[in-house]
Image (cartoon, rainbow, N blue to C red; front, side, top):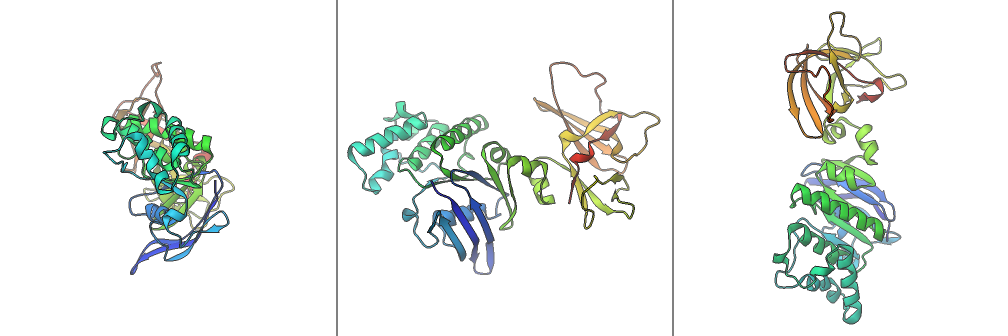
Length: 354
């Protein structure tokens, strides 16, 4: 196990900077997800940690050991990539043993480690099969067993589940989290899938344009995003652009006015956001007005999505809002329909200011 420390890690290709002065400390045994859109620098950062790409500036340390300039085979990091990269002519056991052979580990010791690694990923009963005889999820488990069989200090995973279908992704990520917790491996997981990051990571590092936007627990990242980018990238959200008036209210570009939660900063605020599940809809009554935190709107569309229903409503200013509510077996009284006039409201504490 090892702590990973990055200090001002930068990668340039000519005049192009793909990773810009990233500093981060990852605790021993911690599971951290690098999350962001394609091209944000998350994979390049992982490759610099692995030694597959050398940093232009900055340092990478595993514990007290500076590994910045060391080649990959001297860093003792287990690597799992999107492509399984299994040898098609080798059995499952032979694929897992390959890394041990490269490290001059053989005989009974190698056999013991291979059996233990396969047992951890629940594939010991398939040790003699060829990769082509396995499902995609099983092949990914073989790749994971191969990465942990030589007892690495850290485990680095680059989009390891993206080639799997939705059901397999759910199964394999649950196995991955169980395995990481059991072994206590310091782990970095690169993904562009926010659901994966939220469900497996102790902390999430959100990246954009080569920089770190926010580091926090899944709950912190989702409920209290540090920037508008994070709010829009993590989960679905409704953004209101505008500004703060002298009286302390926020007025949107469409003219709606909302009270700003007490105790929050007001300087420089140009937008606020509300998550769809925080919005409550009720039937509009004749006496309802455009009170702070309450918006008259019209239901435009209703989409059934299994566990939840998603409603699209449009405010008087023309702004669309997404509203989500959990479904149940019990019919809900007075369910809105397209064309109905409603009032949208939410708790003031759920407002996120940017």
